[in-house]
Length: 144
Image (cartoon, rainbow, N blue to C red; front, side, top):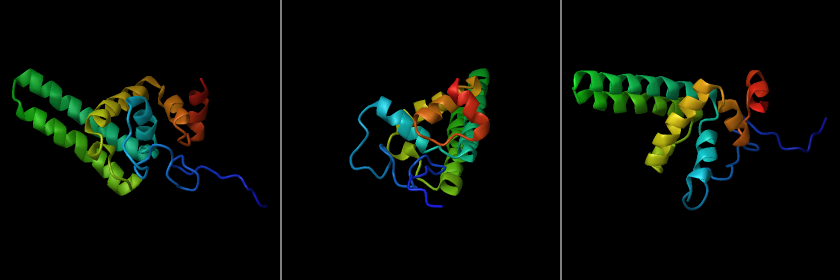
């Protein structure tokens, strides 16, 4: 049976072609409103997001340790432990270059936005709006 419709893949792009705002696009993204959906598409695979959540959680624990002890070396540990797992997710699972290489501040903000959207249960909706294929278990939550 021939189906002429283009089906989105796991990255949310038709036939894995770059979507609007992706790193293959010419020029730079100009606004954060344009960046956020791009960021979510760059984190389309749940395993990539899981590596981010791990890094963010460890990074926040290091921040708490820095505040509790007054030892600023915990901040360095937080940066390494925050970015390290995230980059593992990108290089080994998502197979893309982290957005933090081109958009460091927006990526930093978006990592926490994605983390707290996940914790609050609103990430499915955000992923769907960005055009990322949402797993069936999350589809009901995305419609709410």
